[in-house]
Image (cartoon, rainbow, N blue to C red; front, top):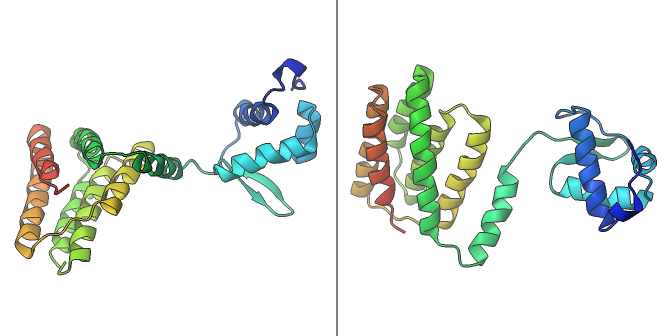
Length: 223
């Protein structure tokens, strides 16, 4: 790898961060693989050790790598949730509208239904049925909220698409975290029945019916 040229040295830390990422890609490194030492990167890029240390520190703070004291730097598993968590925090303090999150949930969960119907995995559908049955045991507001959250997360989990699950799970988690929903026992029973109807439509392989029920269900959320 060629040392960084003088004209590329502004801003130097960002250049080194990108070069380290390029190295990871070019060497086909995977989660758990160890990166070269600070000294090695210093030699490779022709920069000071302090700049390499700053670049590695940034990559650790953004959870691309983890640094073990006395052992070195290692590549992390992919996880988009922390990135989205920071994004939604900034979005919220900049006058974000909860209805926008509701719209995202409709978009993503409708897509999940198409994937579930296409896969027709009975294990995943049985798990959704179990989640609905288990939710009937809820008796408090906190349990109502948890039961609703678990159902929607399990719906997304049933796609078996890891990246999709990471992205959408964060959206669902964020929505239920910031939205305080209070339901009467009768309202909660109606919510469970809506969940049950969605699952029944999925069991019949009727994606259009399941999406219609899902969209109506989500739009009824008190925001």
